[in-house]
Image (cartoon, rainbow over all chains, first blue to last red; front, side, top):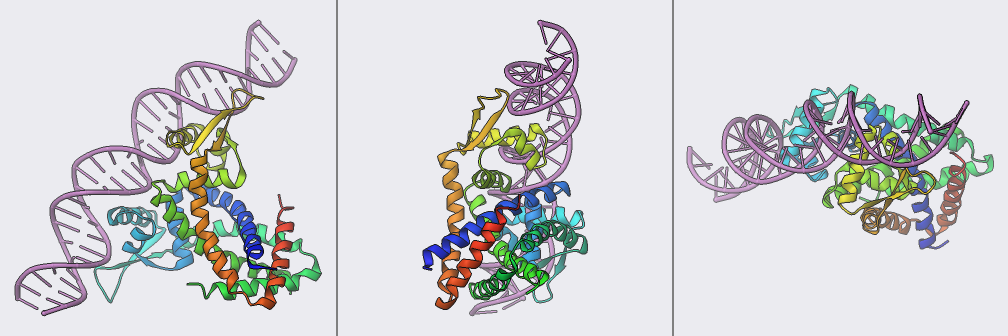
Length: 145
Length: 145
DNA sequence: GCGTATATTTCATCTAACTAAACTATCCTC
DNA sequence: GAGGATAGTTTAGTTAGATGAAATATACGC
């Protein structure tokens, strides 16, 4: 199998994944009283770890003022907390609170459900191969950045 | 390999995928002058096809009024168009315009880039197995809904 | 120490996004 | 064809999200 074919297969899979995931994302964000932008911040914190306020400004392509206020609203809601950096006291690291983490995990658990039911449909004789393939992808992806 | 192990592997891969994709999403949305909510609508249209205004209200968990206004702003920007349904003249199907489609494709092309560079890192002897595994996942996933 | 650069916040202000309620147009049922 | 249900829009009013400009606190270079 050549590279373009393989690339296309992985993109096809990505399409399916995005289609299934996006619905959950909207549902849990708004269902929990959060805007998409707020949920996006929480997801970033979950997947990429704590980040400075300026980091969010760059990440979300907004002004420092905008980022500061976005974080402030999330602090007010009890979903994140700001922790002063010891190295540089101008900087504040934004962390998920336990409550914030729960919001993210609830949303992600919806994904777990469809992933489980997908795995359950795999024929026994193909499980080993799928497992190996996923391991390879995960290993190689970790070298990407 | 048992189901829980396999589920975990697929979730691990999902985590990597989301982490890599989310950055592009923010960057292209705001870089193109769109809010996350607007980009989300365009993505939905791309991945799931045309949809009625009421469909968006349910999907995004907003009131019919909110959905109507959101679509109106996108129409004003030239990214989507409303087409009256022939069957039921109360209904208007929302479609991507060519311009809207380009916005989505530009954002998605960022993913193509990292997918290509990931595939390029796969050892030759594992390509066949990865290709097979992806085909299996894609086939089974299409049975999910 | 002094001047400059950086991280963040605050303020005034504008637009986006949302809701409830009232309204229009169309469909469906009996 | 009258009455009620459904799809969507409009309006008035609220909150979130954005900006630029000014303020504060801290760090860094010389």
